[in-house]
Image (cartoon, rainbow, N blue to C red; front, side, top):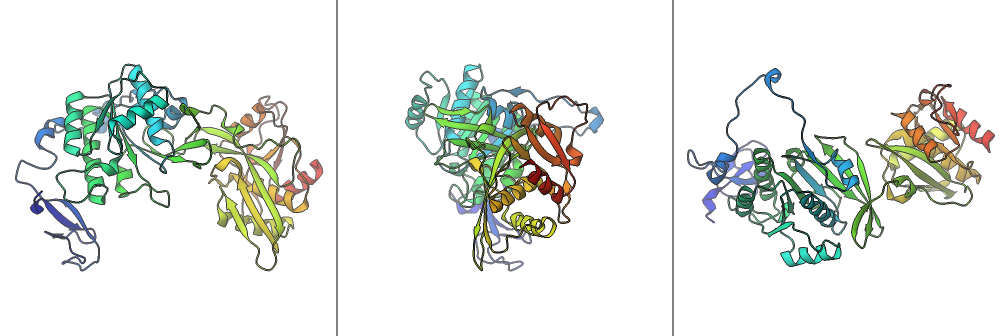
Length: 461
C-alpha cells in the first residue's frame, strides 16, 4: 500500500500533514494528528467506485412533504433481546453491541441469527476473530446443528462490502469491528482511523441497501467501548453486555436507541445451550430469606419500561477513627450524602461506623429513587432490627430531608402488589387514590419527609 494514500489531520486546528509527526506543524499541538484517506482524484472519492451506485443523491424536501412511515421490525425470536431493541431489528439499522470478553456477545448473536434465518430472512455472519470451523463448533454446542446461517471469515472491508452488495442479506453481523481494516488506510486493524473508516462505510451501506448491520465492539479496561466515541454517534443503537463472568446471569442495557427506549434492559441466564431469557428478573435480585434480617430493604427500580424489585443490603459495623463507606451497584458519593442527611434530619449517626451497601444480584442502580431504601437498610442494620416481612420502599431524598416522588410510581407499586408485597413506604406524590383497587393486599404509607419514614418503620416493627 503506497504511503501517499494517507493524510494526517490535526484534531485541534484542522491542519494536514503528509506524514505523521508528534507535533502538529500548524498549531504545534502534541499527539493531535489522526490518519485519514487523502483526497482522491476528481470523481473518484473513497465513497465512490464500486459502491457509488448504492446511495443516489436525495432531493431536498420540506418536512411536511416527507412521508413519515414506521420502521419495519423483524423480531429475533429472543424476547429479552427484542425488548432491548424496542421490538426487533429495524431494516437499515446499525446496532453496536459491546461487553467484556467471554460474556456471551457472539453466543447471543449466533442464536438470534439462527432464529432470523429460520423465519425466512437472508443472514450473513462475518467473523474476523474466529475461523468458520470455530463458529460451526460453537453452533453445535448451542444445539444449532442444522443451522443455515451463512458464515464469511473475512477482515478486509472491501471484500465484506462486495459480499454484502452481492448477497443483499437482511441482517449481517460483523464480529468484530476492531478486526476489520480498509486498504484505504495504512494503519493496523483496531486503530482509531480504521475503526472509524470501516464503521462509516458499513453504516452507509446499511442505510443505502436496507441491510441491518450488527457491529460487535471490544471494550476497554474501564468497560467503555474501544475506539473513537464518534463510533457510538454513527450507529442507531448501542447495547452493553453487563454482568459478572462468574455468574450465570447477564444483562443487556440499551444506552442509545433511535427506535426504542433507552436504559431498557434484557436479562439472560447462561446455560449449556446458550443464553435464555429470564421472564421474571425480580426473582434474581431478591435474596430468599426464610425470615426478615436486619440491614435488608426491597425497592422497586425502573429500567427503561420495566419495573424490577431489587434488594438493597446494608452492613453497619464499628470502624474506628477512619470509617469506610463502600457501595456496590450504587453511587458511592450519593451514599456519603445520604449518611449526612440521615444524621442531620433523622438523628441516626454513623460517623464512627463502617457502612457497606450492596444491590443484590449484580444490578447497577443509577436512579435516585433508591435513596429511601438505602437509608432504611442502613438504619435497620445499625439498630439490629429487621424491617417487616413483605416490606418495600422507594423515593428520592433531598438534602433538606424531603422525600421526592419517583417517576412512574404507580407502575412500581403494581409490580410490588403483583409479587405479593404487603407494606410500602412511598413519596406522598406517588400514593394512589383511595378508591383505586389496583393495589389490593398492599398497604401504602405516603410520606413527605425522612423523619416520617423513620417513625413509620418504628411503628411497623
